[in-house]
Length: 205
Image (cartoon, rainbow, N blue to C red; front, side, top):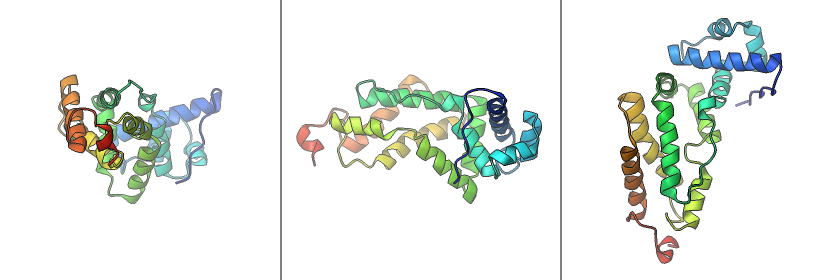
């Protein structure tokens, strides 16, 4: 997918981009992906639709840009000294985003439209550019002998993320710190066979 131009730090152009992307998120949260139109985004942002098409030729590119530029989804990679501590920070951040009305609505809009090829494409791009658990987190855990070198990183992340999305997005339930810690323990133990740090000999296998 063609990458949308990033807004410059200041000036009218940057304000227009910011307003359009915010309007896109509002429309996505309110109506979902399929009913979303560039005309509606333009009206909400107070710009001409040609202004939008010049920067984002397709609806998919517009929505992908808006999701990638979400302020509430921009975060630093935690480095708390252990895998459990890093994962707790990441899960807590994700839970906070998915606990808001708009966060749930956007997640439902994206996940609910995943069967559409263009939705699947930009969801994959978002996940690649904004991974739930950055690769460096698992790389550090391997170096600390907390998980085996052969760990299936994709499956590990799926097993952490799926229960959280199911509980918050689809069931509308809350999660607390105790739930997040239990989830982390269950997933790590499933991959290591023990809640404790691996021995050097076991990690090398």
